[in-house]
Image 1 (cartoon, helix red, strand yellow):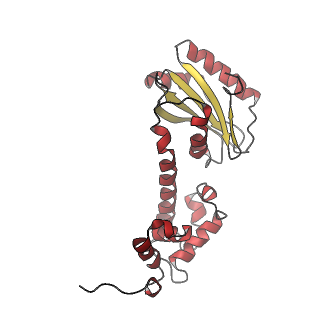
Image 2 (cartoon, helix red, strand yellow):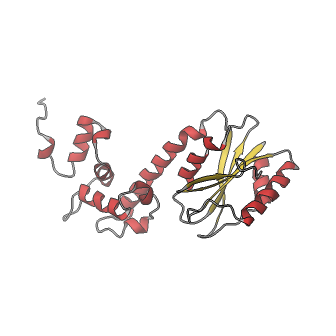
Image 3 (cartoon, helix red, strand yellow):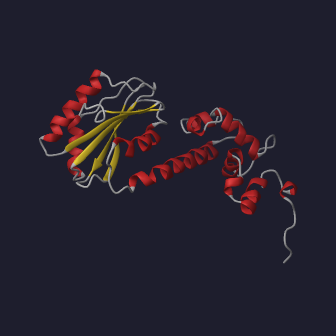
Length: 230
């Protein structure tokens, strides 16, 4: 069997990223080349790499921005159908879950800094406000994470009864509240503070600790516990 001595430049444009990955490893590929591998092939007018560059342009060459796009957004590009759009979004979601995997295996959550960055990653792609809860065991280890409610651009409503019920279902002894601010502001509203007090009081009746309430955005995070509001 003869060894293939063709250089990468002699391969078809759509095959070049795959051959480059095989020869030199995934880290040597540009973001456009990695996306091209997901697309598998180009069109009559554009190579897979050229299509990938168009996708990146749609997200302002920012993978975080790209992660906020929908299937319909991606399909605005000529040559990107349902299958290709779904493949791109699935890959971005895998990357997001890989990033948060370490968070889920932590032995214990000791402070707001242990979780804030991971919650930013989990919630930053939402264009609307969502309210989530982390359910912890006696050792402060995460046993469940769930988005409880989703709202509009300016707010969402979380029912304390639903949160307490889910805490009991998970045998949780501690909870951490979290919601995002798509606007970027980290200032807690009066409604945020009122809801936090209601949930803390309801949880305390069943010996469930409210450990913190975090507001996250692209600008950073705000911890109610750090500001002595819990």
